[in-house]
Image (cartoon, rainbow, N blue to C red; front, side, top):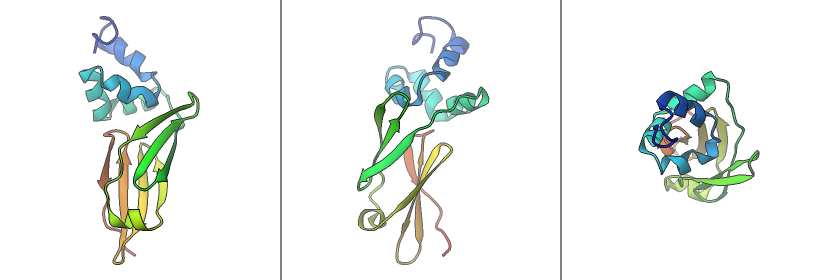
Length: 133
């Protein structure tokens, strides 16, 4: 990581990167492999929480399966990966909720409810457990 910030050492580099706005993480992660690993592992988010750094983000879906994030402090939009093409999310209403470092999206199939979870830590979607009705 020291190569990213001119040889200042790993600890100081991490301290600086903790203060980088979250909406820029994946831009910087494309440049430096060790920072990418730090973001993907979730350690950066835990370190930010430990030192009291928090940011408010807005997430919205205006097109089927597509989501975007908005950083209101920096007036910056950023993309997140598309949801998996699960039929109930493409053809019917869905509800969503942001919790911690996740976005939960709820849908309904004929036989059960379905949950998809987007993780900021891994920048990916996963299918949640089937819900009881």
